[in-house]
Image (cartoon, rainbow, N blue to C red):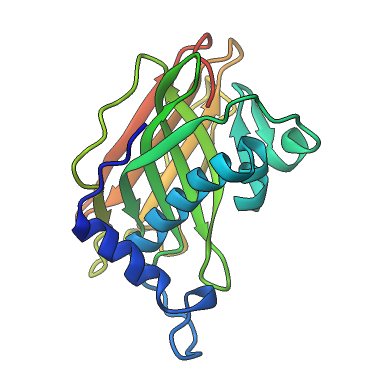
Length: 227
């Protein structure tokens, strides 16, 4: 799969990486601010590492401590990935869009993937670490209905910062092992779940200043392959 990212996007990614190790500039403490470019850079580096070192090696190297995968059941990534043999050909993928909380503590990417036998899209939730790096905390394949067309430019949105949401309003579903979470400032919310029959669901909402807008909402049939 070829990446189609225009020069403006590449310059944003390079700017995100230019502040030095840990994302700090001049040794100053990190500030709670959104940085979609850094998330895009993390996703691209994740995908590149899969081609250079192996698919599961890349997942292990970039996962947060409590990361989860859906294969299709919910599993703790560290346990599922431990000692897993690499596939003969690693999946290729690229981000198409990113949504970030106002404070940058969490972000979500969505993009397309392709393997020798299947293709589709995915969503990945990214957690900002204490040193400013992003690691993925949840990863889910969303479709397997053919490769999604890459955009000319990766879309990026940041939650509204002026008016903060209340802590109430997280949707709880009873038909799955539904789990909900939110960014530290509450401006990005998500939920994930798997039914007893094996279908998996992810829902992501972004704060607009007056309410939450659903930016990702997808249920995957049980028979669909995982990335």
